[in-house]
Length: 238
Image (cartoon, rainbow, N blue to C red; front, side, top):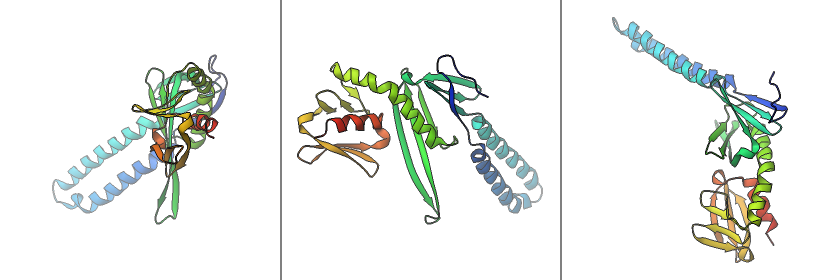
């Protein structure tokens, strides 16, 4: 059982690696290769069987290394932060140490739509440039991403509003900035009186001018702190 942390508080939830997701692909690759070699290379007289055994041993070792590399991955969510385990090392982060939360969610369809699954990818960037990528390796990753976003924005929103009140330009992507005066992107400015709203469609965020034209558009996975940006845009939309 994971104990509470004196700084991060009580444990909220744990999200270990989905070990079945690791084992099944590895077993499938090794099994399929074994069958193929058994009816091809292993039938060659003399050197065929020994070479087959050597190849299978190499493939099994490689598959085992991949599985063991991710076997102990785990994210533990606390009241005020989270821990990220990579190998045998646990790294603790307070929510206030994360400056960017990017997310991607895609629904994948297989066999003509008979099988569907949602793939997630959450990218967290820390104050010192640390980059943490979380995906479907973890159990209940959708719930993990939602709770992380809530905790991070809870700490980040007051700080960003304070920066805006001081006249700073706050980044929300690699090029997009927002200030008390308007939106800014690569030397272009869209002041709030000229701002016409936004749309989210087709996996993109589009910012419009008051005349209805598209001023700037970018894919959602490239937006920092999307939920907070949308909140700020709605406050300024007339």
